Image 1 (cartoon, one colour):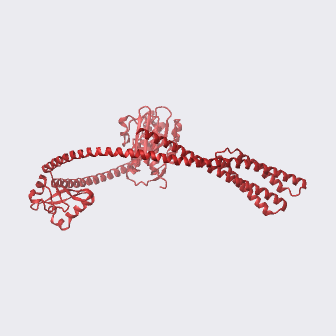
Image 2 (cartoon, one colour):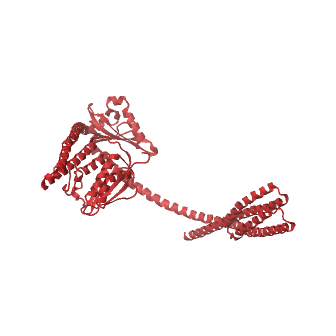
Length: 587
């Protein structure tokens, strides 16, 4: 078997080599033919251009000059085509390259000839001789181009014919070798198939015995199952087998039911609608059908059942019968009904509790707004009186008295800021917010404007990395959120100039605005608590504030469909983020 394989490999390699040689010869011949065709066209154009120049010198006919110009314009295109096909051919294109220089000399000579209308006879004769000399050189160049390529084209054509003959003979030899190998292969396959058939026959006998034993074990297993009614139907729906579970669930003994229609298990109203036959037809069409509903036991009692019907097919896809499995789910149905009733009751209680909580929240928000609003009047009076006391009677007070007046004024200012923050927090909780595309860059600029004085006083720096995108939000709320975060970043410093960095991080259809500082940082156990109302980690004397700023940030972000968070290391700074939906183009 090895010798035919070696011979076939050698013949195959020879055939591939001959085909490659044939393809190379045909390709070269085609490229050479294209070069020859382009060279002849170019030569005819040059000759025509020379003749038209001479005719115009003699006749001074504008039509002849116009035709000369058209030929001159076409000549450049033809010359370019000749250069392209020559460069792709098997012969070096140096001789073709000389044509462009000769063409330029000829064109300049022709232009001089056309422009010389009043010269003497000797000058004109000299110019004609010069033109003939140039044209003779061009003819020699074309003869070189055509001669070399025609000879090589004829050689490639002969090589192609020779390669064709060799390919034909090699193909014939390879076909004979393959035929001999195929005959040997078929003989060996027949011998192998005969041995495999004998082994398969023995294996089939063994499997047949095992299958009979398996079917007997399965029959015994099914007959012992009591939780499920399992039985077989013939193609017309008559009961063919019966197990212990079927007797327990349906109430019939095997001798009472075998041979009867399965429709007896359906209620009368479903039998009248043709449901038994429809279920079998649907199972036959789909391969399997699962159904649930009421079924009837012996004696007429009804029960809830889940049924699985599987179509059994023989060779050719013909229906041989159906496997029927019934599960009594009466108790499960009762449990489900009870659970549904409990769920509905729970949902009603939750809805009532939700309404109560919403009402309580509305009352609390109204109370907060009212208290904050009512505190403004006495607070303004306290501020005014403290100011008058300090201005009008300051020189009559001792140092301790003046200090008390200043403390009253500072406390009033803190109370005023607290009331303003409470009102803003209340409005964020109650007001309807219109949400639309908002450029973050403009929001940051607006939020920074009132903080620039404090930033300059502390020699601080705010860096914005890259352009910031537009997000879906409310412009006023976004400005407040950004102002609170930037104010905290500048306020909670470590005694060194504050450095604040802002950047945007795209996350699919959302974006995160990061506000990073070099401040005091926040301990891990306080990172959630700081977003609550009146949650302060430091005394007001150390870091002034109302304790409501971050609560406003959180409530504002949530009202715009976003979220907030913080990452921080104590002593190294904090990185607050606000995540909002990205504004898409066209929104």
